[in-house]
Amino acid sequence: MSNESKEIKVTDKRMFTPDGKLREEYRFLDEKSTAPEPQAPAAEPEPAAAPPAPRAPTRKEAAAADPAPAAAAAPARRSSRQPPPPPPPEAPPRLELPDPPPGMGPSFYDLVAVLAESVALYLGDVELPDGQDAENLEMARLHLDLLDILRQKTSGNLSAQESAFLEDLLYRLRVRYVQKRG
Image 1 (cartoon, rainbow, N blue to C red):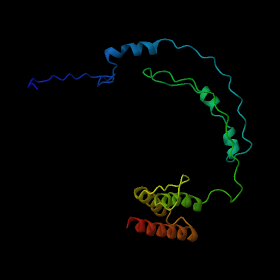
Image 2 (cartoon, rainbow, N blue to C red):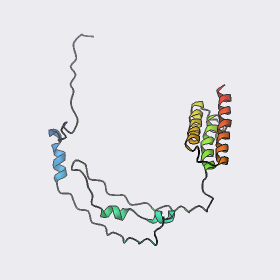
Image 3 (cartoon, rainbow, N blue to C red):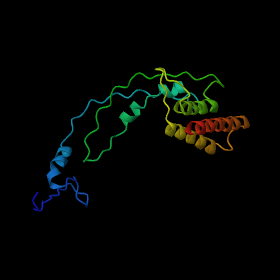
Image 4 (tube, helix red, strand yellow):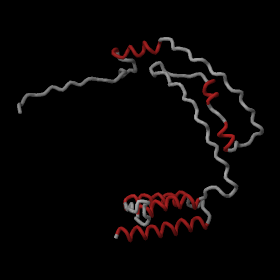
């Protein structure tokens, strides 16, 4: 190896100067943005349906409301430095979810069960469909901590049954974690 000093060349590749002006080598971008843009054919706005009464819309009504006409009617504001936005893709058909019957929606117990299921999986207590286990004590600890955060953040907002359920579940999962950890 020779003791020659190697020269390093630093090139500033930023588009703008420190005072916010476009650098000379990027002026062609500014010239392109000042050229007249081709006009797209204007879509006819759909007539807006009047709300039947001042109430909160149901899921079906919210799903049926299409924000596209309002967005098309609003004038587009954009900087001369940004390329024009791509044309909006055709909207896929909307999925209408039925409203759950009263009292039949997800509950706090369902949320806790979903989080606890991950702990059991990572503790190796649940067998995967292929016959293997997914024991990972680090991930089990993470999900235990998430359940504890849920307990802390909902403190005082749960019924006595919900609070007791969460406390008991956390206790049992922590004992199982300590048994696995050794």
